[in-house]
Structures are given as structure tokens and as C-alpha cells.
Amino acid sequence: MVGTEMLEILQKLVGAEQVWEQEPMKNHTTFRVGGPARYLVEPGSAGELIKVIGACLEAGMPYTVVGNGSNLLVSDAGYDGVVIHLFKNMSQIWVQGNFITAEAGALLVRVSNEACREGLAGLEFASGIPGTVGGALVMNAGAYGGEMKDVVCCVKVLAADGWIREYTGEEMDFGYRRSRIAEGRDIVLEAEFRLRPGKTEEIRARMEELREQRVKKQPLEYASAGSTFKRPEGYFAGKLIEDAGLRGFRIGDAQVSEKHCGFVINRGNATAAQIAEVIEEVKKRVYADSGVRLKTEVKYLGW
Image 1 (cartoon, one colour):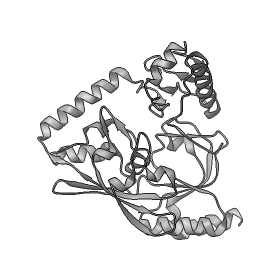
Image 2 (cartoon, rainbow, N blue to C red):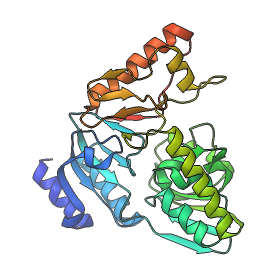
Image 3 (tube, rainbow, N blue to C red):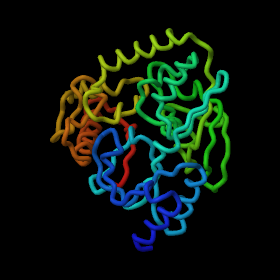
Image 4 (cartoon, rainbow, N blue to C red):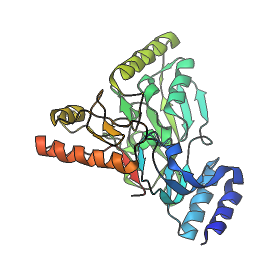
């Protein structure tokens, strides 16, 4: 299918104002790097999402679903397919009693702030995680002793066979930085969180305490994808990297953070290739130094 025809189909499905051609992915990732997506589409509903995927399948066009791009390293060459961006449009939040329901594109920061305003405790740990609900469920995002698995009671997905299904928290098969979503082709549509009554001022104080810890320990002043590496069993990735003499290790503007060695940062003008090179060099030298094989939390697209 020629490009013009595919563009017209996507525009017809979701509206011309929700489709971009040759859209720089550096504008949609927290690393602030990445070449252009052939098309970037922002569906406004599950129905539109289903139609966009159907059009991609019919056309034989590769597609991928992304949220805030907070765990994504897109190649400098970009992605020759359709990026389905679940962020701005599919981001509604509803509160009923002790439950909050949020669409996949809602930022965790927004959801945790809404919980605080409603006097609901349990999502304080997520108040500084830059990802969306959908992305957080894929990888069972967590911080400071809390994880998605602790608060999720129900997840609605577009299953790989095209049907909409619901999974309980137990059926999500959450593990360390994984879930059943990560293992297949299901796409998160929305999730329901079971929280507990609390005092807004106490919840806010806890969120502020965690924010101060992040500011003190993490290189928030630079673009990054958060913790670059998964925690190896029995070790801390940052300590292994520091012990291998890699604090501040740098290729161009891609650098192992001097503040927290578990972060690879973009000092301003890094390329995706430079970031990937730093990551691979860290993995190689940590293995040579300690025998531990680091695995990345970051997902690669377009490589």
C-alpha cells in the first residue's frame, strides 16, 4: 500500500488532526532521542484503536503501541510503521468509592494526584513514575516498595485475537518488571485500582517525601528512561556499574549518571546510537568485572 493511501485511511479512521506523518519520536520519549515514525496516530477510543490496528493488519503495515515513551529507546533511523500513541486522548480517570479507574494513556502522576485529592492511599509510590497506566501495567512498574500488582484489581485489554477481555490482578501474572501483557500482544485499555481511605494531608506528605528522595538520588535534570537496567537477583545494578569503574562513563552526550550509576542519561545532544553504545559497554564491562549479566528495562524500537 502506498504511503498516501495509508495516510488517508488513518485520517479517515481517527481524524486528520490525530495523524502525523514522519513524526520525530524524540518528541515522544523521555530520552529525547529517536528518528521519525512513518505515521503516529492518537486514537480517541478503544473503537478507534481497534480500527487502526485492523487497518495496519490489512495493509501489512508494522505497528507498535506506546504511552509516554518513558521506557523506550527509538533508533536514530526511526520506525518504518505506525506508532499508536495512547497518551493524550485515552487518558480519562474516574473515581468511585475506594476505586479509581484510569484509561491506558493516563499518566501515573495524574492518577496518583487524583487519588490524593480524593483521600485514597496506596498510589503514593507511583507519584514520581513518568509513565502511563498502560506502560506501567506491562512492566509492573514500581518504586520505593510499591508495585502495580499491589493496587490493581482489574485490567481491561484488547486481546491479540481482537476481543476485549478483562483480567483480575491475579490473572495479570505480575512479576519483577513483567506481566502477562509483556509476554503477549494484548493492549491495555484501562485499569481499576483498589485503594484505601486515607487523609489527604498525610498522603500528600508521603508523596512529597518520595519526591525529595528522587531529587536527591536521581539525575532528574537530564533526559533519561529512568533506571536503565533491571535489578539482578542479589545485586544492585548501580553498585555493579560503579564497581566496574563506569561512573560518568560517556560517549558523546550519552553518559552513565554520576549521581546514580543505574541511569544512562542524555546530557543534551546524545543520539540513540550513542545511548545504545553506552548501554552495551556497561553490560560488557560489568560482566567482565563481576560475572553478572545486566538486562535492560529499556525497550528498543526501530533497531
